[in-house]
Length: 113
Length: 112
Image (cartoon, rainbow over the protein chains, first blue to last red):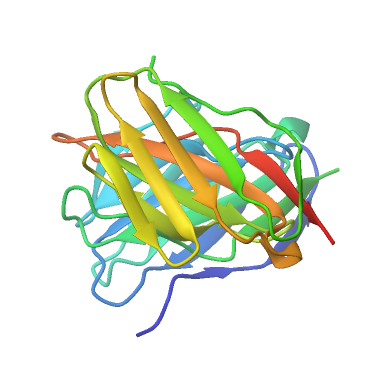
């Protein structure tokens, strides 16, 4: 069984640039959620995709956008990067069944200079 | 606003002791609760899920849920230095978008 994979593992960008992060969900999982985790904080929910449709969104501005592909992999796009966007970005997948836990990928560490 | 509260710690316990990690939640609609372990610089790893009031045991780990008090805890018996990590509590409500809300985590240090 293939777990959740994310790419890249590390990324350095400058303010104002745009970034795309990628996630492949665990085999058999159709739901992908993205989280931002700042240092010393818990994961903050960005949005969730279920079968290619956005299924919920957290308190993040519109410059955070995403999509899910037919194979259930997903992308997170962030435009007009700000210094506060520096964080660990986590992707988690689940099988879409209520009450089932999410399983996380190793994350992408994004640093904004 | 749905909130999950955890004491950030650090909680320091000697090797072999019982570590007790606590979590409270504000959303009475929460039905499912999860404990994740996160090593520094790594991603969260699922340890336990609990859905019903009472205790659930898995090896050295016991999760406890009290919905009336809106309280979840994780006990780690025979703590080992390798248990040193941040422990994240998450709760999710049934129905609609099933999206867990995470606490900020409790840092656990197990010293030899």
